[in-house]
Structure formats: C-alpha cells, structure tokens
Image 1 (cartoon, one colour):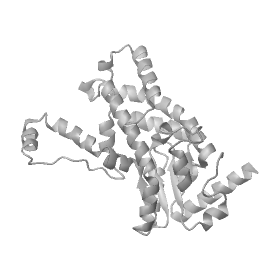
Image 2 (cartoon, rainbow, N blue to C red):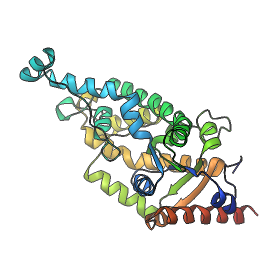
Image 3 (tube, rainbow, N blue to C red):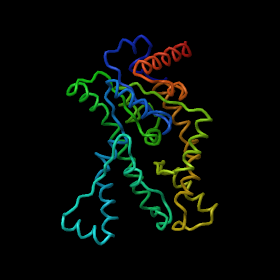
Length: 294
C-alpha cells in the first residue's frame, strides 16, 4: 500500500463508528451478493451500475427503446400521440436495460451495433461510470445525515479498473474514493476465471472496455476472422474478447489493491452469510496485511 487507508489495522476497523467499504473485482465473484446481505443487515447499498443506468444514462437508454418502438406502426402512433410511455425499469438486481443499450458491435441483423456507434456508447459509459464513482462521497453523507445509516457499501462495476489509473498516486477517482472508503478487491482464482468464461460463453453480455484495448481486439478479430465490420457476429466477437478482457483487468485490479486498498479471496467471500461475517473477514484481511508489511 503506497498511501494510507481509512482503516489501517484490525483494531481501527472494529472500533470505527462508521464502516464505509467499496468492493471491486470481476463481475460474478460476489460484490452484489455481499452488498445485498449487508443491505438486509442495515447497511446503505450504493450500486454504481444502478447510478449509471438511472442518473447518467437513463435518458439514452429510454431513447434507444423509443427508437426501436418507432419502427413498429402501432407503437409509433401511440408514442406520437403521447398515449404510451416507455422507460427503463432498471433495478439493483436487473441491469439488463444498461447492458442492452451498451450493446455488442457487429452485424445489425444479429442484433449488433455499428462499431462507431458502439464506441460512442462506450465513451458515454466511461463518463457515466466516473461520475457515478465520484458521487459516492455525497451518498455516504446523505445516507448518514438524511437516513441515519451508520455503515455504507459501494458495489462497483466490474469495469472500475478500466476508468482509473491505479499506478497514478494522484488518480482523480481513486484519490477521492480512498479518502472516504476502504477499497477491497475480491480476488478470484484461475478456477473462478475458467468458470466465468464458461458462464459468459453460455450467455455473452455487453461490457465496457478501455478504448485502446477495444480497438486492438476489434482489429485483431477482423484480421483473424476475415470478416468485414458489418458482418461480424456480435456474440462471437464478445466471446472471443471476454477471456482477453479478464486477463487485461487482473493486473489492474491487483495494482488497485496494492496501491489503494486490500484484497480478500473470492472463496472466503462466498462463505459470508451476515454482516458479522463480513466485518470479521475485513478484520482478518487487515491483520494479514499488517503481518505481511511487518
């Protein structure tokens, strides 16, 4: 750890009047499950993806639905006469509207989005994610002052490592977050990664990539497949890209934990069943970190 965390020791953590924690790591390793357990146990749950999909991209998501609805004569007539309303019903547990809007590049006949439009939506997501992350301290204050919550959990997007530079000690996002929350990486094993790849292969989903990484993957895929951009199978491309994206993200997550926080094993996280279990897990991780630093 290059800098100081808000809780450096097990004793500080256990004695803290307010426990503010940010979970990060690959999607599918338990961030939202733990956040739900803590929410049910009296913690305030701030979902970055939910904030992105409502506050920052809600209008774009709804407009995309309307654009598709306008292609259907009956719905077009009803929309133009203001007889129906179309909106996103995004929830903490259902982020499908956000994923659907982000889309996948490739053949429109297979549900794909033209690559330049896809890049535009990726850029929108980047800006929205940064804004949603920077909103976190304000939500900590609101949770305490308005609603009387003592403890706060920030459930981040799997792409947090793509919108920050963990090697930069002046990173404008991480420097803000680390002053208000304890940053905790849920570290998966090679077995977890293999399972995530299998799960993704069964149901490929849209995700955010760093612009240079995306462009490199796109150009490489076009060269290897021999396909023109408009003929790319969207699911085939995101399947091809997924394992590469996980490998790309792993060292970035590790650097975030090394320079800005601490880590816990995904297997240990899977055993957490209550807020008390979670507090004990973080206490153990802080103690282990202190011994390693000694």
